[in-house]
Length: 368
Image (cartoon, rainbow, N blue to C red; front, side):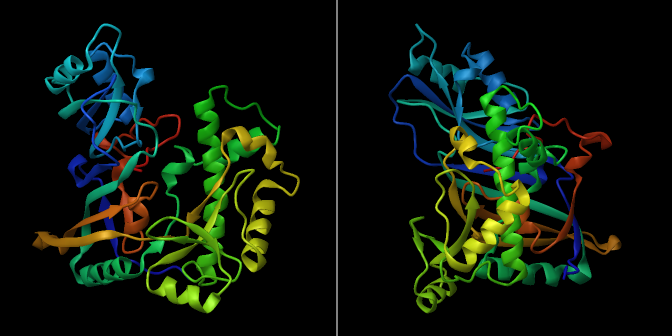
């Protein structure tokens, strides 16, 4: 049953969606790469990387980044650039700190021994404004946010994962089943496969939400420890459910791959049934081995440092805006958190002046 959540609007202005990437580690100050930390506004990560690299005569193809950040917002992240031959990394860092580019503000730059790879981040800190919330329903939103901070939310992949048209998973299945030709670029191949993996995972999560077990360990579940990320099979249901209630662990869902760890018992039956329904019973996972080995993703998303401010901006309109602040681990979606409290309209779809913003090959970027 769908809850009648209070309405709201997000991303009416660029500054309504602020993301600060938390680095996994600081630069060492030595090495042939240069870490550049910057804030961008109204640009994709790829656009910002190209602008910075071009201004410094670096090869953008050799740049590294931990995650893609949405164009429709004000986002801060760190990238790495490889110092060109004959250019001292310290000199490159100095030039980077002096850059002046439209839509980009460089905060710091320092050498390091290796490039940044995808996933090399500690998480993301968000500050998001939800506008046009009816004043009479503000208490419903704040009550829901209190539950989110206490219990977490189902850890769904957001719409960004499935491309601008929402059809990346369908395209991936057509390609991998031999019905259509796939993309030639390895990056696009991995992107399509990740969408199909996410589709399977979301369907498993939906089933666990429907039966009320998304945060409750079942015998045979692959469980994930919150603190260390370690995985183990649930064999003592009573003990593991107590630990889940205490916030120590969560059940996981499948990120498909040829070497992914499967659960046993009832969780295994559910996952294999959904995999067969989604991919077809004769789908050969061995064909995806070069795209990744597979993994497990926690079904519950823990939200850290959650707080909010309520501002009555237009008393005559009987509407309020709520500024929500929180920290998420890498790979998690801010919109998943907001969707637990507000039935929001994402005005990013219209963009400045009422026009849809251009989408890259994977559609809207995710702040992960």
